[in-house]
Image 1 (cartoon, rainbow over the protein chains, first blue to last red):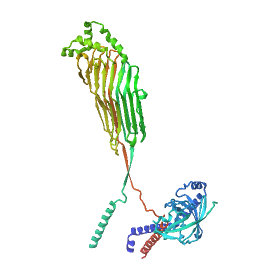
Image 2 (image 1 turned 180 degrees about the vertical axis):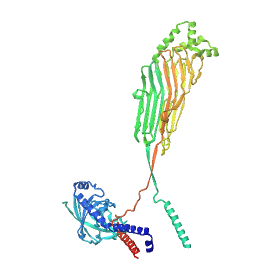
Image 3 (image 1 turned 90 degrees about the vertical axis):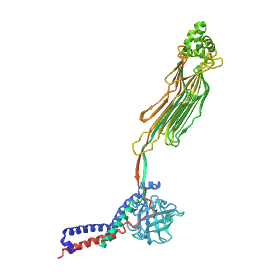
Image 4 (image 1 turned 45 degrees about the horizontal axis):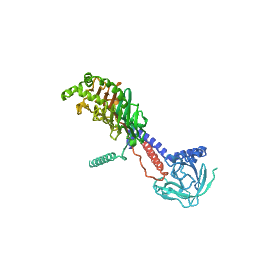
Length: 202
Length: 427
C-alpha cells in the first residue's frame, strides 16, 4: 500500500481527499448531540415566551393548542429539570425536549397526564429520570394554573408497546416516559406521580 | 478457480434473492378514483289523449308529461283537463333522495265552455330521486266526453231546409250529401235511395248529441335503472260516436275506434371510463294508432266497417254540412341535439261536421318521447396505503445515540488515512 502511494500520485490524492471527508463527517457526527442541545435551548427560549403569551392562554382555555406549541412547564427539583413541554409527541414536536401525549388530559386535570421527554439529545430533560425516588415532586405550570405531583414509587421499566401506563385513571396523576437504556429505544423508563395540590397561576 | 466459482454462485444467488424481494411489494398499491366529469342523461315522455278544437275553442283533455335528468331531477304532470286546476297534479323532486306524490286531482261532471261535459277528469303525478335513480310518472284520464247537446239546433237547421223540399228535390242534394260513400254501397245492396233519405232525415230528429267520446288514459313515465334510462308515452285508445242516437236502435252515424299510440326511447348508461365521455346509445321506437270506422247508417240495415290507411285520409259525407275527414298520422323517429333521439306517434286527427261553424277538430292519441346522455369520466390515482405502525410509547432516547460512535469511527479512519499518507512520504 505504501509503495502504491509512492508510485501512484492519484491514489495519494484520493486518500487525502477521503481523509478530509471522513474528518468532516466524523466531527459532524460526534457533535450531533451537542447541536441538538443548542437547537433545543434556542427553541426553549421561544417556547417560554409563547407560554406566557395571552394568545396561548386563549388557545389553552379553548383546548386548541396545536402540536408543537407550548403547553406547560415542567419542573423536577430533584433533577434540576426546568423545561417547557409542547403539545404532541411527534418526532418534530419532541425536538423541544418534552411533549404531552395528546390523548391524555391536559396538565393538572383529572386523570392520567402523560409526558414524554428525551433522554440523550435535545436538551435531555429526562436524562436522569431513573434517579428519582418516592417522595420526589414534579411541578407542572400551565397558562391557567399549576399543580404538584409526588412520586409514590420508584421509576420502573416497560416495553415500548405497553401503552397501559398512559391509560386513563380515576385519580389525578402524571406519567413521564423516556427511552431506556440511555442511547437505546429498546425499552421505556416510566415515572408515575400522584397529584398533591394545585397552585394558582402567577 | 473453485473459489471464483463459489463467489460467482454466491453472487448469483444474491441477485435472485434481491429480485424476488424486489418483486414483492411491501404494501399493496391502492387506487383512488374520482369523477372529473359527471354522468349526464335526460329522458322525457309526453302523451295527449284528446285535443279538441270546438268551433274555435281549444281544449286538451287527458295529458301526461314526465321528465328526468341526472342533476338529479324528476318532474311529472298529469291533467284530466289542461288549465282546469282541480284536475291537474304536479310533482317535482330536485336534489338527492326527494320524493313527491301529491294526491290524485279529480273533478266530476265538469262543464266546459257550455259546449261539452266531462263526466270525470283526473290527474295523477309522482316524482322521486331516491337512491340516485330519478323516476317520474303521470296519468291524465277522463271517464267520457259528451259534446254539443245544445249544438243540435244549428245542425238540424242546416238539414231542415232539405226536409221541406219534395222527395225528388231531396234526392240530388242527398246524393251529394252522402257523396261517393253511399252510392257504391247502395248499388251493391240494391237499396232504395228514397227510403234511405227518409230514414236519414227522420234519424236526425232523434240524435242526442253531436259527439260522444270515450278516451283511455294518457300516461307518461321516465325512469332510471342502473343500466339504462327510459321514456315512455302511451295514449290509450278512444271510441268516438258521431251523432249518437241517429238510428232507431240508437246507433250513431259513425263509430270511430282509435287504437293505442306509444312512443319510447331507451338510453343506455355507459360505464364511466378514464377516456373522454362517450355518448349514450339511444333507441327510439313508436307504435302509431290504428283507426277503424264503423258506419251505422240506418238505411243499410247493418254496420259497415272501413279501415283508414296511413297517408290516405277518409272523407265521409263530402260536400255536405256533415262532411268529416279522418287522418292517421303515423309516426317518426329522429336525432336530437348531442346524440339524443326522439320518437313520435302522431296519432289521429278528425275534422268532423265541417259544415257546422267550422266543425269540430279532434286530435287523438299523440305520444312522444326523447332521451340522451353521456358517460362519466374518471380520474384514477394510485396511492400508497398509509403505513400503520404499532402504537408505542414515544421514542425519545435512541435518536443520535449511535452517531457519536460512528463519528469517532470516521475520525479514526481519517486519522489512519493521514498516517498512510505521512508514511508514504518517508524515504
